[in-house]
Amino acid sequence: MDALILYVSIGSGHRRAAEVLAETFTRQVGWTCLPVDVLTLVWSGLPSLANNMNAWLLKLAASFYEHYWGDHEALSALDKVLGLTNMVGLMRELAAKHQPAVFVCTHALPARILSLLWLKDGRSQPTINVATDFMVNGLWPVERMSAFVVASEAARARLVRRGYPTQHIHALGIPVAAHFATQAESQTRIRSRLGLANKPTLLAITGSLHNEPYVQSARVMSELFALWGSEETAVSPHADLQIVVITGRNRENLLILQSLVQRLPWPVTLLPFVDNIGEWMVASDLMVTKPGGVTTAEALSCAVPMLLLGIGPGQEQANADLLVNEGCAVIGAKETAILGAQILRLLGDDERLAQMRAACWGLARPDAAQEIARLAQCVAQAETIYE
Image (cartoon, rainbow, N blue to C red; front, side):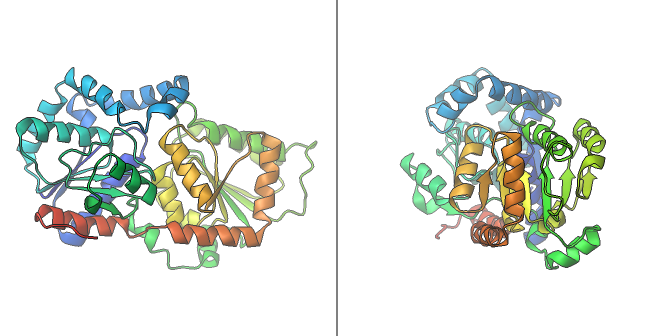
């Protein structure tokens, strides 16, 4: 085994990043890779349970999480929890079974378990942490890690303050699938192939099934459809646009939107889960989404400006802050009527959208996965890494 790529299925981003790295390592350097959700080492049903519990806890204790997520003292609390389990022992068994040349972690939990294993056994094996948000939280370990991949200079600075050697920190970006970096067709041609008109296009991603804040974008789109379709709403009939909503596995939201579509003054395309999301991003002028690290990294690679809703505490707020400060995104208004006007105003402002698109290009790292593959080769060969 060349690479054991470890993640946790809380949200979809960590898993997607792990799968992208596995595919890239195999394609680029011919490695044999195995992505593993470490929660399945305990029980196959634990990922689903943990996902639901995480969403529920964030809803109840968002302010607590916001305060402590970036504090490295949270690592002590995690260590106490891990001390009550056999996760270190299970990780030792997994490592002995597969004997990988390098370990790669796209979530802080497996990274910490490995860190504790290396400290306990008095030896270290090549281990790379790959953060999937634009800021690193306090649960990421710094002990016995060979290299750390981050997506921003702010994340690098936080690790340096915690004592991690700056020469081992690599600001390579968040890994995204290769097709996000290879959209060679023009927006006009992609729109034609997707069955869209060549006009201002709004894309909304509403696919989560979890509790707040994750369902906010789905609820808001339903409210916007109701607003725009209301006879009492003063929507300009001259606004020339089209709407695409990808509801993923959220069938309830799909059915609600279908019941409202006929009242809207513009054409609407409603889609369930799609495997060509990059094309829909390129075809769009503005994307409504929550600021998950992998989703926004994909959007940056497609140069689609973002309007952010359903911003979760901690790393999602940090993602939103960076994207807004860099000019790639705006925060959506909380009041539906104001939000509706905000979206229509943005779609009608070609100059602003062009500026936001250029900012996305400036921040995008579409080749991050390929760069991480090269880094992993060096780490596996125990070479000294220089930037």
